[in-house]
Image 1 (cartoon, rainbow, N blue to C red):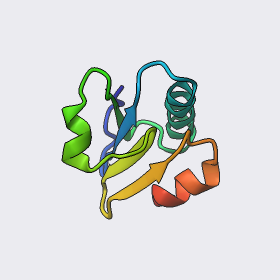
Image 2: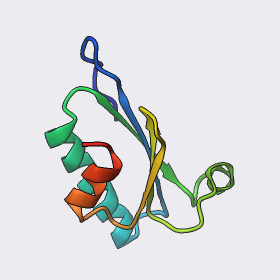
Image 3: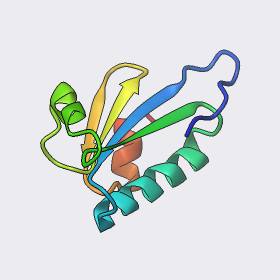
Length: 96
């Protein structure tokens, strides 16, 4: 899922690690999609990585628990663990 980059704005790049179609995975995907649609309109990109399909990806980013959201850009990098239902915590981690 990617939105077009607005002029003069830094793209928010996120990577969400999930495991299959588990309830927490579905909730995390829905929650971060909703948060970005409201607070980061047109300047965000969300990559969803299913560790059942790509277990090696967890090693590269040091993922030990899912769901885990990584904020890749803009710096500083941040990490949020859980189903992302606490919107205030997620926004704080994303710098909003």
